[in-house]
Image (cartoon, rainbow, N blue to C red; front, side):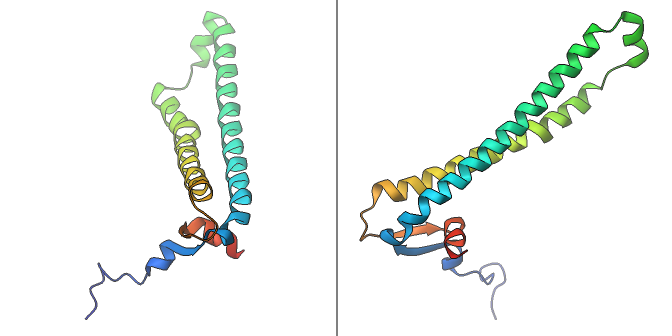
Length: 129
């Protein structure tokens, strides 16, 4: 009987694949450029949120005292949830993308074209598409 915890159906090649470095080099630059583009888009989204949040705060502060009392502002816990959703989680994804870029660049910089390198699954999937 096969133990479902140990044998989950994934082979090691699904996680990383071994190829010659010369086969991987042409794809690394495109892969890095794609990941950097993703990072730029996420950072723009975060900047837009922060700018919008600052504008809302300025608008609230510029209201008269009576109007502020009638309008109210978002509770702090709502602001915290917004911050987690619009800033913290996207920045965690940016951190992960930067780590993937570093892995790809380390393959490019630390191996000779004839070396056999372990290629991450994300890069293999990009190479196959």
